[in-house]
Amino acid sequence: MTFSPKRPTYFLIVLVFAQFAGTTLWLSGNAVSAQIEAELGVKLGGWLTSAVQMGFILGTLLNAIFAVPERVLSSRLFLFSAVFGALANISIAFFSLNVPLVLVSRLFTGLFLAGIYPIGMKIAADWYGKDLGRAMGYLVGALVLGKSFPYLLKGISFELPWKEFLFLISLVSLIGGLLLWLLLPDKPLPLQRNQFSVKALTAIFKIPQLRAAAFGYFGHMWELYAFWAFLPAIWKSYLHFHPEYSFNVPIATFIIIVVGFLGCWLGGLLAMRFGSGKVALFQLLTSLICCSVLPFFADFSLSVFSILMLVWGISVVGDSPQFSTLVSRFALPERRGSIITLVTSIGFAITIVSIQLIDFLLEYFTDDLHIFWVLCPGPLVGLWVSFRRIYHE
Image (cartoon, rainbow, N blue to C red; front, side):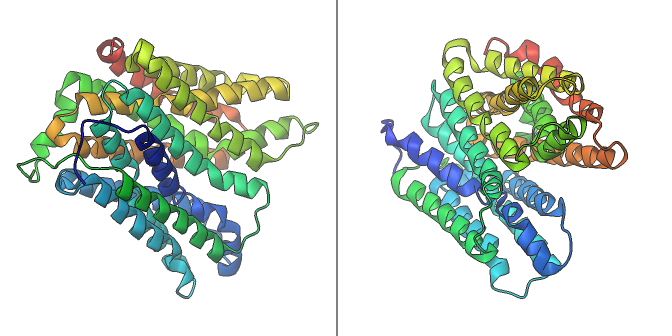
């Protein structure tokens, strides 16, 4: 397959589906965690998610350091990652179940996800120029859909046995990888194969506009995954103060995550008119405001509180594709894939800190929504560092 300047309309559909299919692996273990924990006789808690995050960070770091995206054709790397991610996902079905096996399985699933999510963004950057903001909006929206899917299954009491469930998710990942490999041609690799170069990757901190976009993304990531991870805790805290209400917390969580697709989609459309910089900064500011006023809205009715949560759910992830667009635009062309991957890796490393911090605080301040103020510094710093450099982009 060879790169062509012409771009059939179905390319974005294939890329978005492949991104969705691949990222369903991310929280597939969480969807059946209750069944796995019952069989093991132990509680795994946040370790299922943390293992995937650590594997993803390791994979993205290795890809960036050794310039894998510049050495391997993108469609092949995506397919390889989808295949081996699927195998890692179902590996626990073939051996005697134990805790180390489960955690190693999730770790390797995250490791191969590093060849799916960032590589999908690289493919979009290769194919889309002026439309990149819109394309990134759909891609990150696909990630949102993929990650919210387990909450939907849990909310509707999906009772498929955990082994069959993991096989089904792995099959979806394989189909996505195969479709992308078969239907999307690749941009040729650089004629001069890149070697390991710390200097090239330090461009993140040396190029002013790239640095601004990256730090905006880092600030956004400090807030995003902690918000997603503790959405059930937010809803349960609200119910604690309002026993007169009753609703399905997993479904409510699914809705708040999945509406993020609207933020990504609408943000992509608005970016074509106003620029990615303005859209990213507006959504980052909106999510900061939502986080700041959260404790005060606990006294309001469910409908008012739900509106706040919907606005937060839309804006908290809607800035992500636009920051990624700016990183792609300002990255060195010959290192674009590795720079995107490294920025993503740093961003996900930041999420572990904010998640663990919220988890720690919840042990001592149960049902106190004020603890979520610790997420405010992320978007605040992101706005402060990036505003001057990217507002007009």
